[in-house]
Length: 221
Image (cartoon, rainbow, N blue to C red; front, top):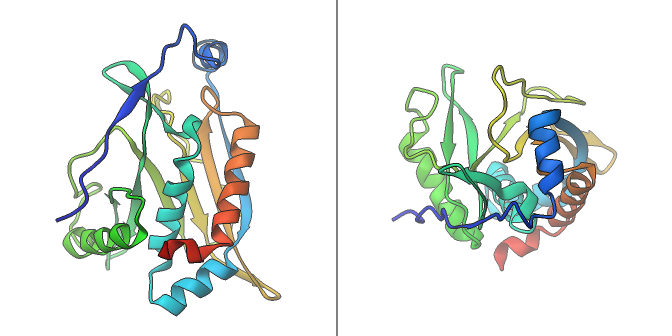
């Protein structure tokens, strides 16, 4: 049995919300999002996954999801037009089929990596070759988009929606690894709505994520 999808949330009282004026400004007066790409050192994490026979993508999805549990500004969403902060957000990630078409799958985040990894592998086995953009239902409002482009190393990546952005969860995209000396580097971009996060929040998130990548042994805890 796969892990149940946690959709619990706390309503945001906009009358007392510290970010109320910024949210109004960046959604009504000057709707804005921004994207930032950084190079992360994945040397220790990559070595750990190879040593333990774990797919790197599973560790990547888990650690980003885990990091977001400590950043409430990255878990803002809407439920029936009510602005909320979700307890957790779950990764909706890209997979590539044998014919090079793609789909998005999601796996429920759980704090236990072994359980998450088991569910991730089960999702790949069940849905990995099913056609269509979203073969696994249901699509929850607390999914966040995370993917990778393992064929190209980039310095910037920016999704361009063709309609006004109505969601606030971050979008992540990783690029091709490069080896520099003894380090393996992975570019990782984040795109986020400015209504919920500023440069400080994104910088703090990346610093925390790098710290997690440097301590892969925590995946066994």
